[in-house]
Image (tube, one colour):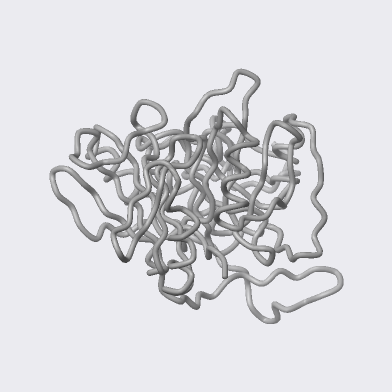
Length: 319
């Protein structure tokens, strides 16, 4: 029994028109729209809801909008949901809607659990030829004109009490600590066997509550690049990326989001088991990124932002 991952996330925002355009460019499918709410889906049915800030019944935010208002975690079965019901029923803000239960975590975030509604998915991904293994034979690697994210892979929040929030997810939901910045940040995965983290909790030197970013899993490194350059062509800014996280090994690209904070494309994170040993890190720029491009790559020139367009000459041509 374990939480299987993120099934849905809700944002509160006031500029729904900009959010609509942004998430469509990001690669999500718009499945419904009203004057008060946008509902998007990823390839496997993971949902992204953007609700107007004054929508009745919208969970309170940890910080002023735009920001994340609710995270829905998926479980495997009704039996799992029943067990979590007993674990959460005495927690603040407990709700039981039958098919969905939840409460408020110690950081003030509304969380819900439901039997996962995500669809099984089989997608073709790039194979990487290394010195020791050559799985890609007579086949070029793909190039993507844009990204179509598979799911929301993880979320990152600023917290005011790292120990309390981390203990809540580990004790009540069965999350497992993967790596940590001691007393500053915890990378948590839903189960012993899984990707490096589904949730990252970060306590700043001057603690505050809020959203840091929401990360979307894509097929492979080439889709990270293609998705980021598509966002550039659409006129959206890049905060940082592409780049590589040394802690999780993931390749990333971050863009500011009109629904709050940042969103990330990522791929190739470490896969862990119960044999994994927690590592301690000291926060710093080289720990966050082994390498990264500030401001991204221009989607038209295919060069670093503000660099000159390619000339078509070989680099060693004489002028």
